[in-house]
Length: 159
Image 1: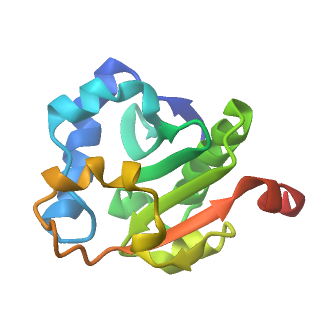
Image 2: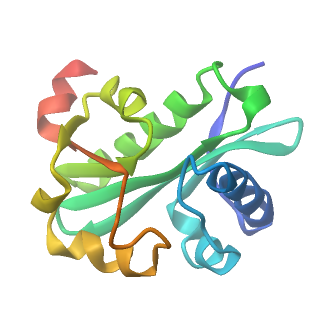
């Protein structure tokens, strides 16, 4: 079955919420409220199989040159099929199309993102704008996620 990445729609929000928070409950990613997903629905991409959302990811623009890839979640029975990779590729493609030069992520799975050219950096090197969402995080100020960053002009040659 071909994996097709599409922009999320309002009707995907509840399934995305369940998927993201399934992994958040296992302490594998940060939780997202349903209202936050609705408010940011235009940031999200999804993969559907059999009419169900089996994966999602978001590209959230932070500033003129900076965006975050976040909420990458793939249903356990749909993992290891390239779903997560296609979702991250879609986010990076959109970032390039918007003219962004830098994309970062905060993750518990750094090796997954390193396959795309993301490199680890100290969270304190991220711009202050990044921390606006952190205040709402249940783990603030003791963040245990790994920060990674990719410079898109450098990564474009790899495609």
